[in-house]
Length: 353
View 1 (cartoon, rainbow, N blue to C red):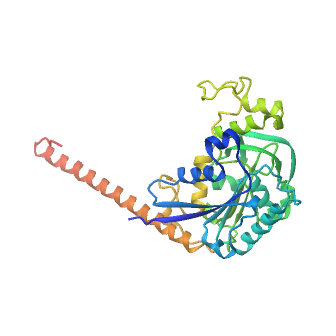
View 2: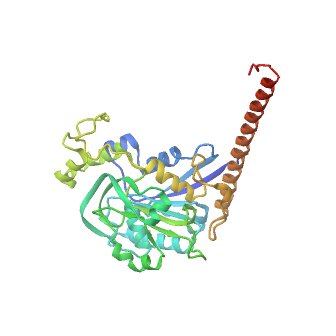
View 3: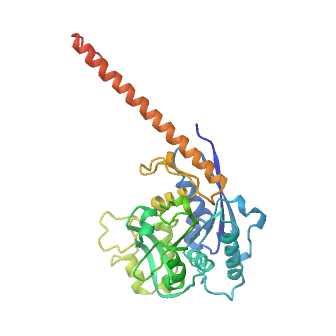
């Protein structure tokens, strides 16, 4: 028997989607709502409630309500995360520092601009990169990134020209306070992880140990969204960047071709809906039942985690036990049938089943 649980997401909306992209996909609230609801693990009685805050309008959640949330997500934005002349940038930076330091039980995830501003809140810097990364891009994961995402490379949609230099985190990386997720050629810092403190140096860290996760890429963006953004902002990217995305066949078509030769980055498979979403759910203590590598029955309480996460761990253990008992019953029934068949054959009777 499983119990229902409500996941509360605080969505800090820092940008806007417009034109045909908004007409088809909605704004950031609709995009993130679709992402969370479409990736909810099957066989888990989970309800996702998303509260959206327009940061550009100086809308922030009340301090006394922060611990009601399981996770805050910081969206992308066309604004530069290093521009402190903008009041809402300064206000957001102060809010994120307070959230990280004073509300550690609440998870935090920053995407693209969100990655950059969260990194600033963690003590890093942000600056122009001098070039664009657009479309599906393979991120070479660090040792920590591989252990968390369980792959060597992670392909995500990208659309950015600013970055967080790895040098700005030299002290945090050296101390282990912050861990690098991975890198690409143009962008050495494709994301960072801040784990909860551990009493053991040799402790094996899992997604449930993550307090803060940032990604320069967009796990929530589809091909259609990136294609629409590239078309809307083609003049800003330059011809070489656009050609790299479209390929020499160009972008004057909508349907995915069978032969992708010459179609650039556009149709490359990305890992946002499966690999990244599983890590986000595991951060919240919800392990996908189909993940054979997980052992929910062996999960232990992590210091600093909220009671809400511990409760959902119990749900995962109960679901795991239920599947084990069901499988055991099936095996016993098959053994009974097999042995009874042998018995009847020994006495010269052919069984009918």
